[in-house]
Amino acid sequence: SGAVRINPSILAADFVNMQSELARIAGADFVHVDVMDNHFVPNLTFGPQMVGRIQDTSPVPLDVHLMIDEPERWAPGYAELGAASVTFHLEASAEPITLARKLRAAGARAGVAIKPDTPGESLYDVLDEFDQVLVMTVEPGFGGQSFREETMPKLRTLVDEARRRGSAVWFQVDGGISESTIAQAAEAGADTFVAGSAVFGSDDPDAAIAHLRSLARR
Ligand code: DX5
Ligand code: ZN
Image (cartoon, rainbow, N blue to C red; front, top):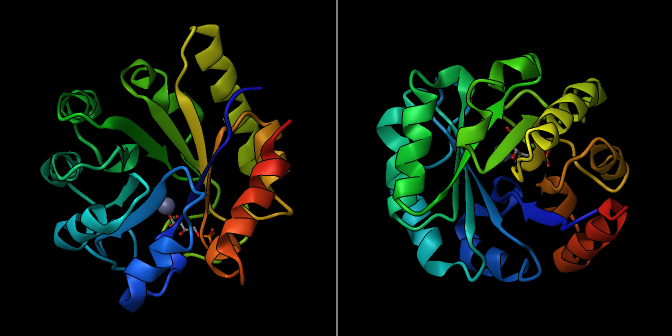
């Protein structure tokens, strides 16, 4: 039905040419920024200093995905540096509701993510405090993995529960989203699509964004 958002993940971009990489995705809705700490996931990317420079440089607003332990300690800083949305993992958070309120108070959209094996019902108590929910469609940590279609019934159930409550929360999918998988995720109720390799692996990233967008429209 409504809007479709395509958020390219700069995990698949060339890190030493970030400014020109950002210029190749002018048609994106948000730039997806994967922060990894080598504790919550077995990979390491960048932190607030780098993300602050990306924020200063990017014409497209930032969608920050924190794959880190202790989000209570770090997440508000990303909202304060100007990220449009900040998503942390439910599995890593001791106080998800308090943290969601802090993110909103700092002017960001508050997001909560769950890994593929985390049940959707674990979000029911906190759902109403968030602007967006991220259902991971791969195990977080690396780009270029295969889409796990067995996560789709969980997504569908969460979307139905949110709509039953009258919630306008956005539903994001992340991992293995491509021209061959995006329609399934849209069919299950996703409205916001993260794509790393499918966008930056293309010769024409803006054309890839437009094509993904057309495939997600139902
Ligand atoms: C994985 C990250 C994703 C990753 C997606 O842990 O959260 O955002 O960049 O990459 P692709 O689209 O290549 O699966
Ligand atoms: Zn991500």
